[in-house]
Image 1 (spheres, rainbow, N blue to C red):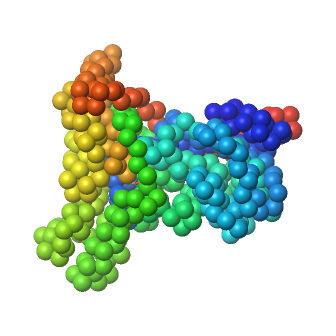
Image 2: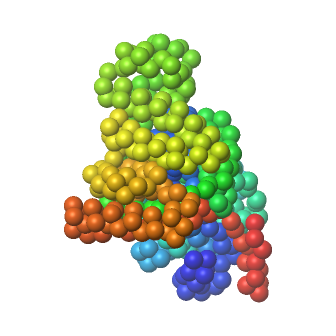
Image 3: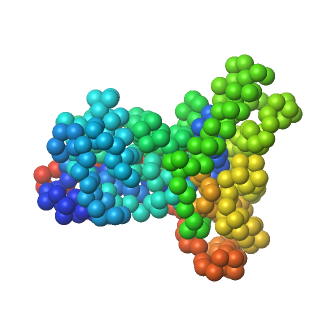
Length: 395
Ligand code: GLA
């Protein structure tokens, strides 16, 4: 993949890039729609990555190319907001510029290669913005910490592009460790890496969603409306996730639908995620898996962010004896995460059975098969400064 972005850069601009950086997509084990409500999340970085190769460019100009559409664009990003994925790059440049970490003249040439599917709930935009923040800041000769990278990437997507996302995806793309899940408390940004036993399958249903002006922003507004009302009960409430779980009857009385259901999901999911992290730490995978099924049900019924394709996959996984399964990411389409036991009959027999049942059930309903792959829990952003001779050193 690094080769791809570098090769694309060379082929497009006729010179070698100065810096190449990459960042992963993610799946989320537990903690869906809790990040922008100040709750905990438990994501895992995938081996699917986005790679960004950069070199110096004209002041105030981004010259862009990507393997995805192959179309070259040249944008004076201060004058006009670029269309499509270019807006994410402009957002990153703007953030770096504001903090003194942008390359000279805040211009650059950029080539992007990615195998993170877009709109599948696998955080393709965070992989792009974190990798871009890493590449462009290194081009400027500035070494940002993983948290600073995540911050710049988050503001680019949230403030500039206007997606009502939380901070989970960017923090995972920047901080993740191979073989570990990341427990992140989104109000304090306290983070802990937890070893991940068991095996994960990713079932991509092929259905896609559009986040920018879509349901995510609507849900976020509902959560904010719930907090505004709940402040009558608890004047100092800032985050919906901080509502005490023992006060659920009071919450139910205070909120009309659909705010009540949304808030019940967030408060329940918050408790589930913290409990799940304890179970994972102790290796209690069976009970942990049950929480995944519970989380899916809560997303489906209370947060109403599932889709029939996702429900079919989760039901099939359960029938075939998977430890747990749930939609991952924002929902409304995209992918399902399936948890299998570590031993799994010794030879992946359980895995074969679960995959077969998922394929069968999905094909019976939709006349096609979903893509099923193993998740390899991977590491966060890395960057490489390319020296004259083409060798580089890794940051
Ligand atoms: C999207 C957002 C994340 C998070 C999830 C839902 O992926 O980008 O910040 O809110 O939805 O958990």
